[in-house]
Amino acid sequence: MQREMGATEKLYYRDPSMLEFDARTVEVAAREGRCEVVLDRTCFYPGGGGQPSDRGMLGGSKVVEVVSRDGEIVHVVEPALGAGEVHGSVDPARRRDFMEQHTGQHIVSQALITVAGLETVSVHFGDEDTTIELKADAVDGQVLRQAEDLANTVIKENRRVLLHEIDRSEVARFPLRRTPPDAGRLRIVEVEGFDWAACGGIHVGSTGAVFLAQVIGQEKIRGHARVHVMLGSRAREDYRRKVALAQGLGRLLTCGEPFLLGRVEELLKNERETARELRRLKLLQAISDADESAAAARGMAGAMFIRRVFDGAGTDYLKAFADRVIATPGRVVTAIDRSAEGFQWIVAHSLGERPELPGLLAPLFAMAEAKGGGRGARMQGVGGRADAVSAFADAIESAVARGLG
Image 1 (cartoon, one colour):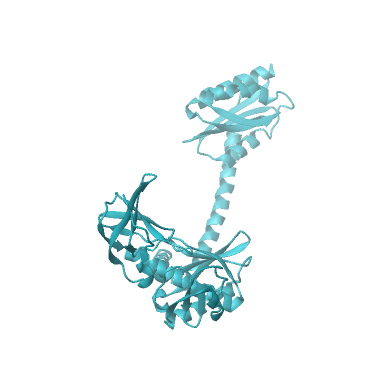
Image 2 (cartoon, one colour):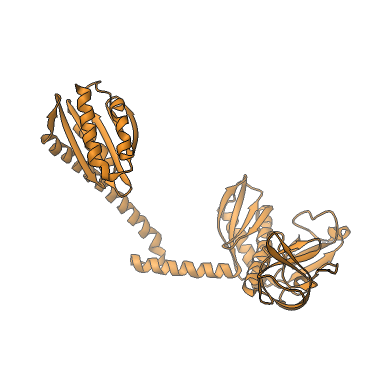
């Protein structure tokens, strides 16, 4: 269609609280299977500076993406939208959330500079939390707590968030955290008397709307410390979740919140001790099983053959069983442990250097979808066909007997 030229009027800068508007389509185009709509005016913020774009509705179509292109705001909609007058509505929860995140990030970034001279390298506003990457390898926990306290003091003071539209030549008037772009007019976002930053994002009107800033952790990435922060309504919901978690754990562990950590540590210690004792008992059982099996062993080709098939005994049990059997000279052991996924196996002997097992057993693997390795008097591995275990074990005994002549 024929279109009229001109930059989109950005209503989100005029009034960030404005979420409903009427507009006229300037262009409707299909690109790469998507319907892109340009309006003469819009409340939909296209994203920038790490802040994601808005979502919402245009007429009966869902706005799935918003981008800025050559001064115009392009709305990607589903299903396709026709030309003409259209009513738009921005998703209020998403808009409010990311305004809180962005303003809160400005406050925390300045708090980190004030407390410890830590400069922000980059930011990311995710769906779960906000991250601030700092020019440092790591940040001391006490520094993070001090910065968090300062940020919450500024939030509690409910300072105004002011916007300044200036020419590049006026930049010296403001103590900016970061060097702004070289050309064009600048939009300075000021947290009154505390922070000044060149920023194209949209923000809450005063710091009280951020409600709370809570540092929840840090990690190292690209040689920098990345700090994770909960801000605004997310921080409140995070607090509620953690209170519910603490209360639930308290009920399960029958202790008050101050004693939860000690109680969990005690339980983990007991669990480790129980696991060690259980392993010791299982290995003793494996030794006992090996001795019983050896007593009932069959003689063949001058050797004693011991064969056992277990169900879910585990790797340690299987190894202990086989080791116990061949601790006595003149024995051959085939130990197999079946599971839902297949089976594990060990074949070993205490007959001296001969026979060498790899040459005898490798040709048998295909029948049970087995694989494994070893050398000389010991091989072990896994198999894919638990239904072929008996035939596999029979074939192993026959092969070893032939090897013994």
